Length: 93
Image (cartoon, rainbow, N blue to C red; front, side):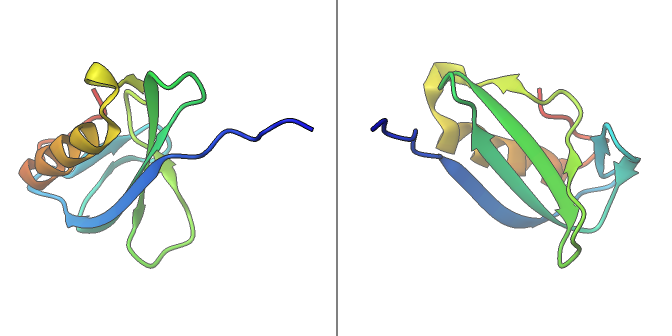
């Protein structure tokens, strides 16, 4: 029997600042968003998805997957939320 890797993930709601965030799927999205940051299996990269809060569709944030500085996913996620609040078509990197 093998152990399955533990998934590390953070998810928060945030209001995107002017210019919103840039996604690979549909371009810029704005407004009330839910952001999910998942640590990759390698433990060094993160996949970032966003959705309009309450919607079903998730979009890949442009630049994702992205290296996680010092392997600190929590710090990366919080910094990303700050950038999204600033807007200007924020990206994952």
